[in-house]
Length: 195
Image (cartoon, rainbow, N blue to C red; front, top):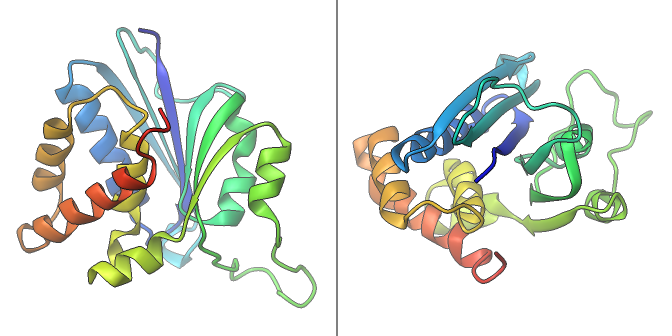
């Protein structure tokens, strides 16, 4: 197996770092060499945050080169567009239908893009779109967006379900384990059979 590269993008407070750590630890537990790198923008102010995770037999650099990512997990739509150039041709985007207007932008002068999914598809990418916040709220845990997206991603990766669940149990607060496992499984259902 070669190297698989996954880029997470979103804004501060969306749980990007936790999601990337769950992926990295799951890959490691499944027997892969793993490298991870986080890039915080103005994360504490809702600014852009990305995290690179690469795993495989031999991985020497944590950073994904432009045009080389297999997957882009975008927790926010505009951040999905912003970092799409990292994807390889025919790469896959797991796109959260969430819009967070950057605080430095005046929405009256710079409108939010209305057609993010079609734009990504026009670039040649496969897009799995979901309103993870709505699902997370319905499950009773609005902070579970990131875990739903990890569940969606998990269907495309060769790790046993037991590995994912164990890593989630070790990564989230004890009182939220059950709800996070439910969110993860809900995400898996959304991309079942797409692999």
